[in-house]
Length: 263
Image (cartoon, rainbow, N blue to C red; front, side, top):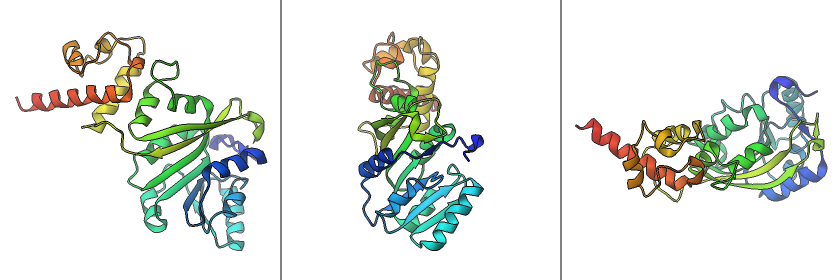
C-alpha cells in the first residue's frame, strides 16, 4: 500500500516502464542507481539490462521485500535510507560515475534534484519521473509563463530535456496531476559564473516578485547603471532574460562587492 507521508504513487503501466528503459538505454556495466524503487515495477526490467543495480528506498516494508529479492539475486544492492541524505560521492567511488533513474515522490523532487546537481559525485545523467509542472518549469524558454528561478538555476548546472508525459492512470494510486519524464545531464554552463552562491541569491531575488523590473528587484545587488553596463535593460522583467544574462549580472555584482570590500 502506498504511504501518503512518502508521497508514493507506484508506476505500473508496462508501456511507460518500457519507454523509460528504452530512453535510458543502460549498458550492462553502467553504475545504475534507482531512487525510490517502490514495488519494483522498474527494477525488474532494469536488472535485465545491467550487471548490477543499486536501489535506494526509505519505506521499511518495501525494503524488506527488496532485500528478500536481493538475497535471491546478487546483482541487486539495496540501500536503505533517505535519498536526500545518501552520500552519492561515496557510492560513485565504489561503483564509478553514476546514472540515476527513478519515479521520484513529488514532495522531494526539487530538493533532491538540487542536492544531486550540487553533489561532488560524478553523475553522468538522471532520468526522473516528476510532476509535469516541475518539468515544464525546468525546460521553459525565456518569456514563457513557466520560465523562472527553477529554469535558470537548472540551466546553470545541467541540460534538462523533457522526454514524454505520463497520465495519472499509469500509477497506483493515481496522482491528481500529470507527470513527465525528464533527462537531466549535469554539465558546466557555456557561460562563466564567478560566485555560484551570489548567482543563486540574485536569481532568487529577481523572481521573488515577477512583476517587478530588474531595476526594482535587484536593487540590493546592482543599480540601474550597473545593469545597463551589462548590456541589459533595467526596465525588463526577469522572465525576459536568459541564464547567461543572469550570470553577467551576478558577475558584475560580485565585482562590485569585491571592490567595495577593498575600499
